[in-house]
Image (cartoon, rainbow, N blue to C red):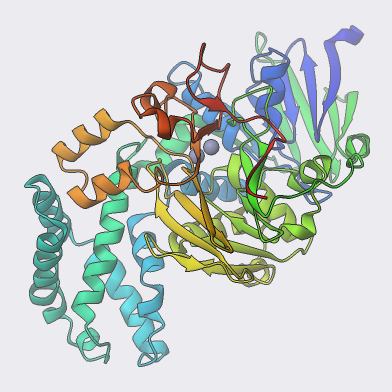
Length: 545
Ligand SMILES: [Zn+2]
Ligand SMILES: [Zn+2]
């Protein structure tokens, strides 16, 4: 054997084994891996060995999302990636991909949105169970309500007209056949159910615009993109030679994070993920930044595929404290590299559960740092399901380190822990439930606001065409097109592609609005002679000093 037949290169929390006969094999899959291969200008390898311990030093080594997105969105159709993992890890991967590729199922949306209803005082445990089953079987799976909703939208009925007809249907055709639910003592039940149903059905229609597979085909879709290989009886992964199928490479994890690589019975090399952790210890930060009374610091401005920029995240400063909009992987060390003390940033607005936005929330959780999470119930519950799959922790142990602050579309709330800072949430337009916000702050007679689009497809002509097809009510269409433009600073997605906003879609605005827009989630180079401003990593903008 030539020495070059097996060469190992170590990256941040992963090892990369190049072999002559078996191709390239990666050990571990930390969040930054896709960007790292883009930086190296190397195609992303297709074989990943997943260590049994999926968190090292509280950092995630189980982030398969962007590897899968790369294969789905940047490779030729039908390309697949291989994961060598334990059967329970495959299950966890599938749970994660279910949340992040497709979003919650419709019954999960309904159940999340019904949280208040399910916790009404008049219900005992048995009533609650009954109501849950009723929501799943009689409402979520009820084809007739969904057909009625589709027709009402296509005929461009107004929101109150749609609401009236759906309520009538629920009252006459659904509830009347379920006496036990009717007798449970909930006041205005049909009205409450209608509101819940319409919120979820509208959101589902929007998510379906970007859908990769029907609900029933989700698992087979995943199987086409990811080939799972399980460990054999003797705890060994077997790789066949690419040219010569008789050649066999055996990989055995001899202790967590340490792999022996054997050919026949000869040991070719050892891969040790534990020894590379230390090399990437956190650097000490510069001197503390001076935070404005109200303003923003950009922690990252790139998309998950931009090789030269951090993933997008921003601290909105208000009254001396920070609200972090999304938490990227390794967030605490990035914050301190900008002179931000993470104790000043205890609130997080979680826009959605794509890993370029939520990876760092888990790190805080594993470091047992309590985080106040502002988001909608639907997004929060999706995050809980994903976190359980990522960490194998129970829901209750995850919730110990999270204080959930529920926000609802178009209901302005005062942010708990702040005196004069207000938060308004609305759903954006993306492939899974995703949020945007406006944050308003008052100091004396001055009131200013900052809006963040979240990940969103903003495209007036597409949105108008979708309205014509019956995707939105008129009020929701206007909501999708509106909401953020009155703010004093508008932080906007410019990721392009199917799921994000193109630069060109924003230049029709008048000069006054264009001056207020600042672009994040940047992908590739800035638009030549741009009329809009691109945010820079680490820059701070003050609105109230
Ligand atoms: Zn996203
Ligand atoms: Zn994103």
